Length: 469
Image 1 (tube, rainbow, N blue to C red):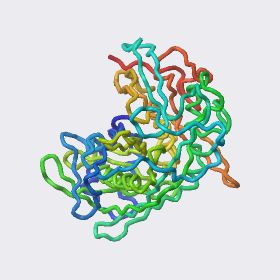
Image 2 (cartoon, rainbow, N blue to C red):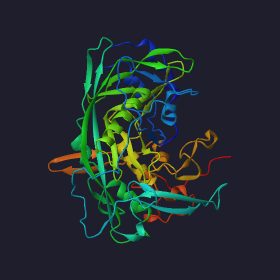
Image 3 (cartoon, rainbow, N blue to C red):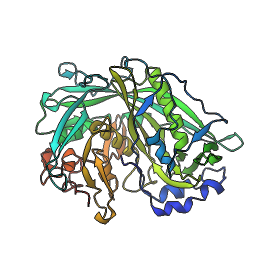
């Protein structure tokens, strides 16, 4: 995920909405905002847990802090100024996720435990490559990925612990404006993220496992798989006020509109939620799930929202961009050895017709899950690479192994996958993912079929181009 999403200049025309639109209807500018720019993702700093402070509750007296020295509230995810401090405790405990028929049995099961000394987290393996082009030619880059070493073969089963969120949106007078329930549990569980289908890298695979296998296809041992076992561990409701108080860098406290509400073409309501408020609510919920044992260190935990996209404000309280669809990060507790790390992600279900590039249904969840598999601890560096399809003069580059990012900017970023569950058929749209070999900047790829992207191998016909100097 990129450090900050890029927005079309057109969205800035809606800046006045943040202060002038007081509409109490299901369409108060959100539809126009969503249609005006490309959705994006953000890079969120690891979240430190403080065992000495109790969680905060949202109330009329709550004041959210605009991040110091920032021009956008989006910096909150790096600055962590609104951290919901709490105790992390524990060693992860037992897996509370439900069983799943994708499991391949115990005969080839590998342990889902950390292979890093002094760390209590999910199973990972490490590797390295030599960069093959550009100013970093010949430089060694190390990486850590989710699962057990591909050369060992065998299957690693990781609990996928899911909390779903329902939203109740209030009017300025405190009455209910709209409710947005999370009604997508069955569709999530039956999606390519958790249900098996066939790919060029193997048969009966989950999506992230198929991508993982494609990257290591020619070195992996027999029956090498990294599978997620989904379980819905919590279902909560967030009540969202019409306005929230924000303290700005000059010391002033101002009320800011907390959400915009719109209606998607299929009739579903969607909400654009102030990122400062989202961060406050999401952190508290994730920490509560950690404390209750719903989220464990040996799992991948997810907090899933219904049609919820984050918008930012500038340091004057004006609208500054939309729409963030997801991110991944981890919570950790300092001063404890082995150090516990809870790898977690936020993603929104996406109703069709709101965004371009094929973004809908599980695009965000597939993007973030694939990135977790490829960079669970947010520390896999690469040589600086250009975004494909973006003019080199723009110098829009990254230098990390965030495997979802390069393709999200292309006109077609997703691939339709049709799955049947009993008598129901649904066409899902997970995001196409660049492979590790794309980041290596080589002339050829040693992935499955010599591919640089997957499952659509034609999306990226060559490896990454070095960032212009």
